[in-house]
Length: 616
Ligand code: GLC
Figure 1: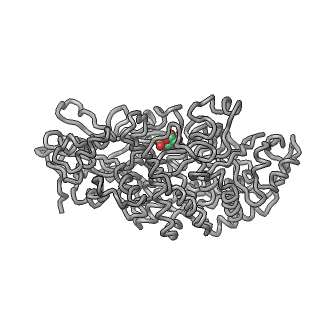
Figure 2: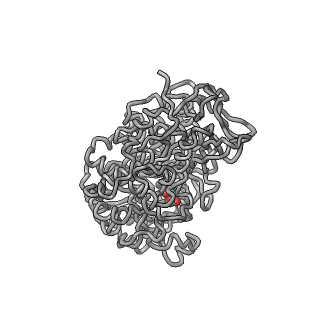
Figure 3: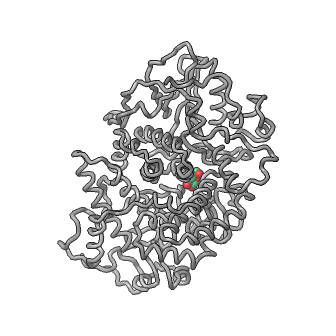
């Protein structure tokens, strides 16, 4: 059946997403007129529909350079046309020696917006902002749903992601009007849990196209409407990615590709549709990320070596080297990829490298990143300058590095994985996301995972306080803050990345707690958040030691705060769904890991370590 075209007057429901002035007949005009411009994408989408009778539109991918457009076969030239360059049309990703990577178009299909599908995808009819009266009686969860749906970004009429923050009263949007890959993960999970799969599928496929155009992964993208070359009356929508080249500090988003793999697997698990992960372009995308991560460099550790600010903490915070968050995501992505990669002759080497890395990485993290009272006491008595293969203090850690705060802070029951490990350097700060995702991904052993949750309980007032969850503990201050952050005024002690509290972390906390069969810990945190987060307008983060204030420069209506809360609520109501994130290690992997663990860390040259080039 031919798809129905979506031309002419937009459906009434759509009006709630456009600016009131553009359609005076819209029922929610007055409400919308009070709101400032939400985001360009909404306006663009409104313009897109409004102008569709007059403009011919082409959707294209753009990165400041030549546009990537779809087929020249426009189909019905007499009609105004949105010629989306949809993911279905890309079946190959190749390498171009001169220009890096490129897309090879092999399909020729025109896709038209289908009104019926569009509505079904995201429940557009629900997008209308509630009238004032209707708001009464809404639960916090209801409000979160309407806000999440309002944050949806459309490309050629299809939902492709969610905007980072959607605060109508804030004019200084910076880059918060973009779709961030990492920020979309909780949004995507919320939609998956609700059975709304298309937005996640579109996100996966569109970001794959962006990824294939750079050596690194995109941190974020934006839908722009630009004039069409040589035609004044026509505009086109383009996806404009940022690979970190315009990000503050020009940070490389190493976590994006890893999250992309994790979301891809989750999409298959929740929707039951494995056809996406089986596509040739998607398989190629997985391999490209893996090759980048598994490539040989100068580093000798199995952990991934990255620059400062390459993950959720995307500013200078002294996390360059081998930060835990990246390692946990890396491990998780390796396991997910291992499960999804289609067995074929050409990938045998890759799978071998992947398996070796999994084993070495888990041993390295479990053994050398772990601290509890017992381990601290060992470090306290470390001998230094040990030259030999059977050194105990392999990384030459000087015991004086154990800071006074840690001696006081470490509970007698519990422990955690430290933030970073380098030669002669242990970063003892507790980084929440790394620890939580180590539980989820099985990077931490079951015993360690329970101990991390024990520590969360024991240190509740420090890690949760008045709003869950501290991004890291403790904050850097004084000279340490000045030297490590470069006197960053945004990362002052107990603010933002430097000991601020981020509601989005609720969802990872919930998955971790459910996995360890201790959901009551997450439930307590969610209850606390629920008591004030809506009143506070869904801030990006909170400040002060106990998270009492809304963050100094926090955006309001931050989408991943909203989505993080929603996912936590959904999972607590349906704990079985959390299992979708857990990748069981198979018997061969477990036995290889156990045999390493059983052997003494005082390894002698030529002892039974797997053949690879890492120090383990
Ligand atoms: C901040 C956060 C980063 C997030 C971005 C968009 O830069 O540090 O993790 O992705 O805002 O919300």
